[in-house]
Image 1 (cartoon, helix red, strand yellow):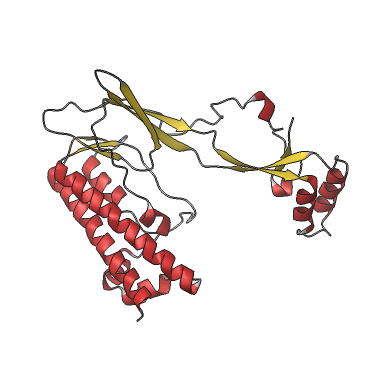
Image 2: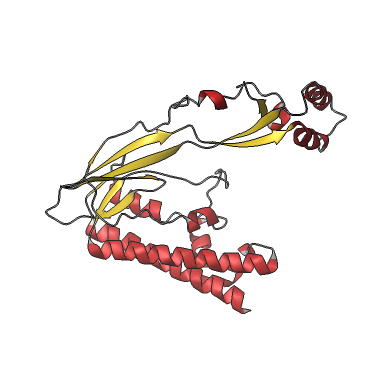
Length: 278
């Protein structure tokens, strides 16, 4: 086994060990927390933070998420910080391996890591979910006064394309198909200088807006919230005020687009999700 392979296995086992230590500490301390729709919040927190496995029927391109708040002792914050460091170390080891070999080391981990092999045998899960391995635990350095949660549903990637670029993309498809021929004809009717927009909708995400109120000023910091946020909280400190957003995201976009950037909602080239600007 070479150095790169050893680095992956050792960093995985350290990350896995620290995740288990974090879960054990959570269950032992039972910190004050808020986790929506949970009747066993501490057990659910431990499960969320240690969730690094693919599950049957789950789209591997997506990550499972849940928002919430966890007031932590100094020891718990320290353990979470160390766990994040080990996550970064494991990610770096994977990236080095991939850079030198051009492959992900799934078989290597399954064959050579004792802890991973035991975990696979015990749970029946197939393999590591690397995105969830890499996902850091959200930690705030100071206790917020309040936290506002809201769905962000207007996220989407927009790639501007010229008519020539769109045509080149269409020509890579099966041009013998009638629907592709129709789109090529439609594209040919446009002026060469017209810009088009290729849209890729993004999954709605929960955003957390943390607020720290001081005598002189108020500090705000927004962040995505794929996991419950950890923050320091002593025994005599009040738990931060917070709202309780809907469990499911709204169906419609919540923000209006700028008038000069509005895009026709009907796809002009459906096969490529390409739209015209209004």
